[in-house]
Amino acid sequence: MIKNRTDLHYYLVEDLKRFDNRIPNLKDYIIKNESYYIYHYIRRLRFVEYYKNQSGIFSKLLYYYNFFKYKRLCFNLKIDIKPGNCGPGLRIMHLGALIRIKSNCTIGRNLTLQPGVVIGNKHLYDCENEHVTIGDNCYIGLGAKIFGNVTIGNNVTIGANTVVTKDIPDNAVVGGVPARIIKII
Image 1 (cartoon, rainbow, N blue to C red):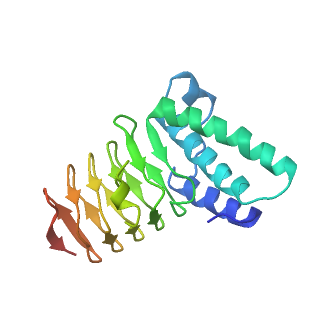
Image 2 (image 1 turned 135 degrees about the vertical axis):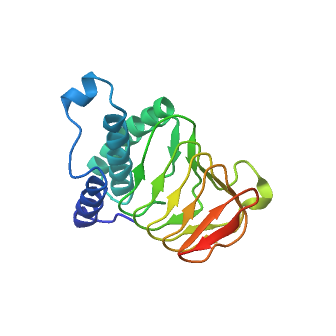
């Protein structure tokens, strides 16, 4: 949760480390490099999280400005990550299929996402009390789905097209439908 300027700066620096401390520039924009759009999406997400927790008229205006730019990027990039879910160091590897993270999720540091990842159910009325918790340094593969009241430990690798419906311990490699522990590191 980003509450003040120092938190915002910390989150932005940690996110930039996942881009090898290189801010995408005009050349990346001209050649339509996807890292340019991903970086600006994550940056706009952090500003929405920051201004959402501020008070005052000018802060609310900046919140709405950033929110509309953020929503425009959501539609264009097919990424729907609700503000306030992800910890510092978020990394989206590629654009492609829809990436969706519902608002009832808590995600730790250094999460890496591939395209097609869905975390949390959508439009199910009996699933409002379900909460997904993901630990630090996790990697979620292409097309993985995480549904239900699930806790995923630290340093977990979830393989491609895996459907996770049960808890996963720390330092595990998981794959299959439904998810099974392949190896504990």
